[in-house]
Picture: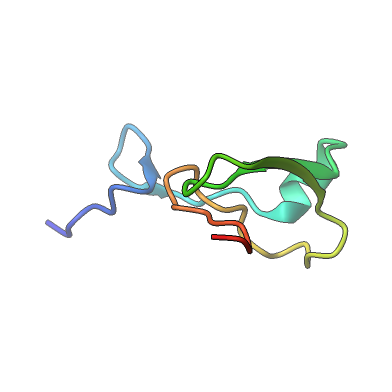
Length: 69
């Protein structure tokens, strides 16, 4: 049995559910993303317009850091 990635979601059959991509967010009418720095807690809402549609949206579990950290 293959090892599961703890950062991914799995369906009832054990198949990995692909992470959402920026294009999915745009299709739902959301063109911004709220991000928080795990180092200092800095919180900002950014526009997703500068990113390609096929870019996966970052996992919440990833340790995002701001440019100051």
